[in-house]
Image (tube, rainbow, N blue to C red; front, side, top):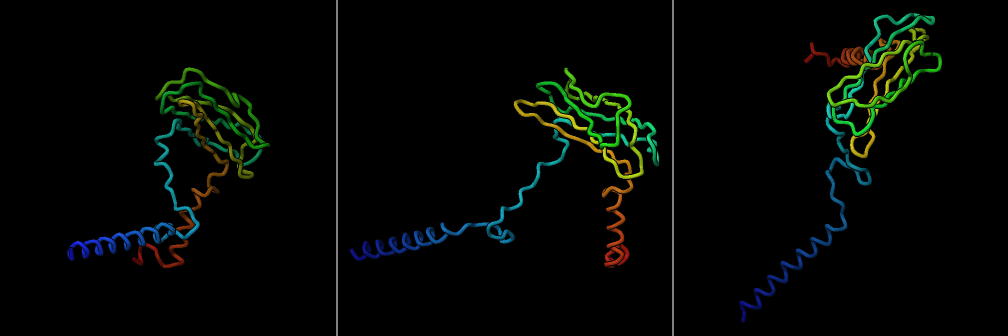
Length: 184
């Protein structure tokens, strides 16, 4: 009988401690220590654009005039990475002072197959290096019940874009901070 009483007391103590620990932790929200309360933890973006339904690019034109309204030919390419359940649509978006001289600003193409590359050409005037102008090509298609798309941009002054300026800025910062490769 004594063993039975001791066993009951020990089991009661274990259940009591476990219950208290459960209820005390239930009110606390658990999160990694690097996440402050009230903030949503960082969620990584989907891996790479290589999984995108469409890949869109615009070839950099050979000659962009310094000024004026000379004609510039732009070539866009759309690669279809998956089977489309509908038509492929595209649209060139131009700044106010750029006009299409030849080609279509937007269209819908039927029967585009997976793996096919669609080449889209337009000739524009007013696209020059006087000031930064951006032209984009947007393409979209449906996969299942969702319409998915992608886009690309070409700049009239590519030397002024962040992609061109960032390496020099990093090099300058490394030199100023003394963190260049020669100091390591």
